Image 1 (tube, rainbow, N blue to C red):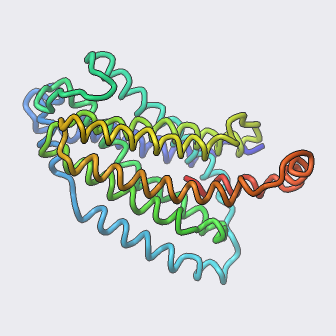
Image 2 (image 1 turned 180 degrees about the vertical axis):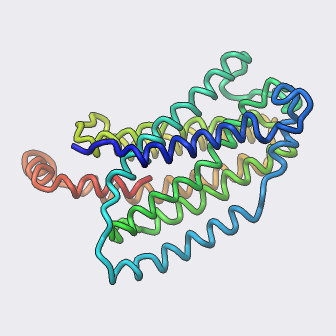
Image 3 (image 1 turned 135 degrees about the horizontal axis):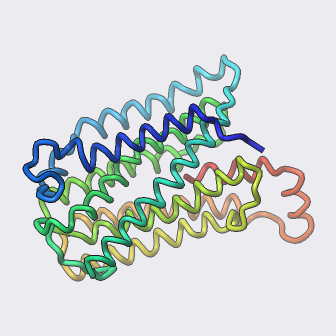
Length: 298
């Protein structure tokens, strides 16, 4: 059973505090009245195009060069860092999902179809939750860094790389649209994805601690259900026309991509497995293989 590494936990705690402080304090230092008077659209309108462009370019280069560099070296074993990372991701997504639920309930907004404008100061925390979700996509690139450092290149699939690169741009695009358009419903996809990440990263954390996870076998199914629900939500938004049409179309494109790719992965990884006692013996004999397959679908 792994032990929590103090240094790694402190590093992620500092990162989490810095992200929180920037969102709630530092970025509003020059705003008269502080957070209570912030212009939500102006705040998120400072979004940088260079950041996702540079990040995805560097990421793709790392995916190409990293395995070649590691081929000549011994694999690293960052168990402590990975454990702290999974703990951070679990806690972070719990906080973001809780933030969405609290704001929607407190403001008495419908789960789907809210027409609250960003000019309403009370809506800022919903917009902030989407920004938190987008910002976390950069930290999630550590999933790939861990694979390459551990020389788990068999996990570095097209699905994995495409998924991480695409979602950076998808959530940048959502934030970009929110800077010029009223659409509180943009929160829904982030809320669904936060819930799925709680399920995923808590499983990774429990596996690292040697704790049996009862929902392990349902993770990929839950992800595919997420894609269907968010796709249906996009159709609803397109029909209601209370958001710019580019948002639901982009959402449907991403969800359709993910559903096809994850569905193909699921069929190859699980549907073809033998059932019954034989399957049980294989699972018991090769527990690491099952964990490896789960780690691919992040």
